[in-house]
Length: 570
Image (cartoon, rainbow, N blue to C red):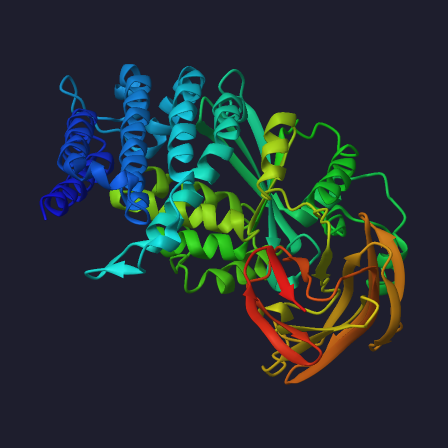
């Protein structure tokens, strides 16, 4: 009971520490870390009378676990102290309160401060990594299976499992975090201003990397501060290209165009490849500003950020832009009226400028949900990164923030839809995917993938119309097409290190249609072996429903919000 009382004190100290972090009060954080360390020490003293149990079979494991967990906790405090020492000299520029200052910095000032101090903090992360390694080593010997799921209503086993998994992840990420702190200042214009081109991808007219390229913005940052934002319509950018380029066979066949346009340059499902093509077109525009990378965003990202910030008002627009009306407003002003009404071409730049201003001056209680929302958007491919800085691009690709087609040693599936002249039907299209897996006695795996498209809404003459879909199904390289069903023939080819099955299909309003392919995987599986599978999500989509069946029986179903690795038990 004495130990239990000590544990309650530790929990209380941890809450105080969390409050100090949220308040960004460095003095309080230091004090609460010391109190937490003392509380951990009290537990160590109070359990010493039980040390005789170490040599007792079964019971001895629990005492040893206590020793390991308490030592791990001390290392956690030590890591916290190293971080405090690292940031204390820069507390004022980071917005932390100390005994000497009570200054509060808004988000914009804080980012400027972070840019300056990141390279100074990075070297201290080696010390933090050493403490994290010690924590992981201590926790490695603790077996969560020895413990109940919960005790007196408090979870036990799941917390131990989560702690071990978290420490493994954090320790593995430390080199990348250190590199990020070294690289990010340059990306944010610390030594010289950086200009990034932001592509607005209209996911309601879905294209391979997330949507039709409707508009663009040029954002220049210097020392972490945004110093200029300008934007324009993508059609206006096409008008600046004097030299005409013959259309690709795909564009000539399905869009019936006589030349290629920059607005149709994102036909590769790999964002890097599409950005390379986009920049090739930019090279044909005289005096276009030099850029340091491209950032793709879609309407889901804008909608979710506005959901945190609240409505944004723009001069000249009667109705505020909110998470509820943003899709309609952008369709109305950017895609319909923007080409005909003077003064509407810069809407994207104005909107982004207003959103960033509201975010930078938001109250502290909005910072956490803003950060979480932005991070989730990147993870779900509503934001894609293509950066000229090699180290930054490498990190973006490693953490799957760059929209790359990934290599995978196992089964693979990526379904890529391209709306060619199908209005804004993706506002209504519902897509479901079923994979039916059959394994022969010799280990041969045959899969049937069925993609069902459903449009429950009527034709409206503006947004909703017949959906024409240039569909590509990427599977492991070497897969053999056995059978197919579609409006047009399904062809097989190789691209991006994958075999790709290509077709062209449609879906009428208030109707449905489907495409199916049956193919043999290029490898075999042993009886009882799990089939490892990677399902990659297409940017600009928001949760198609997937079902996996083995011999007709469903074994897993999920909503594809981000790339997903699965072990399918056969």
